[in-house]
Length: 249
Image (cartoon, rainbow, N blue to C red; front, top):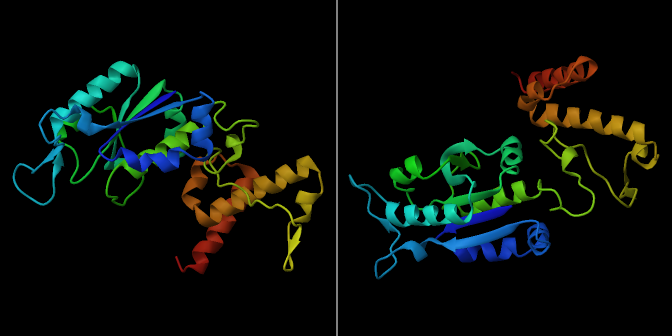
């Protein structure tokens, strides 16, 4: 899979993409990550990529010409890849979106800046708009990093060894269960005995129950979509009811 990232601050990606899973996936040839400086498609003497907004107002707007040329060029090199604009006005990024994007042949990510991009870029050159959430960052670079990290780890071979993504938070509709490792006891706090028992079926049942409890306590909005039935749904509803009573709702 090929990731093409368009930005005016390419140096921001050197450290996060040069470490850990992303670096190993690139070195293994599982993915290709290419960072592009938008200024390379600016044709004026000073490589300008932004200008004052028509109609007045604060800030600057990213110009249509260099963005249009850049996106057109990257589409030729990464055919079939959807163009995604990182913007606070986009769809809120979720695990389900990451799973959909992981099936694409590639992605072209456009990092917005300042007051945003010229609307003609949004309308005619982008296939999708994605936001990390209901807050504003100084640019689309950090959201692009988060998106690449979330999508890349779903690509077969990216994690190396055993694939554990199927049981992570949000993948199965629930938050992940509590995790423990050595030592078995620390300052009077012991890991659950069931996890030390070696009884796989009991461990899986415990983990499932803990995932339901944790999701009900922390993200009750996810429960309706988790496909729970019978005793599992009763457990979740009881936890949610008690939480609401405690909070006076």
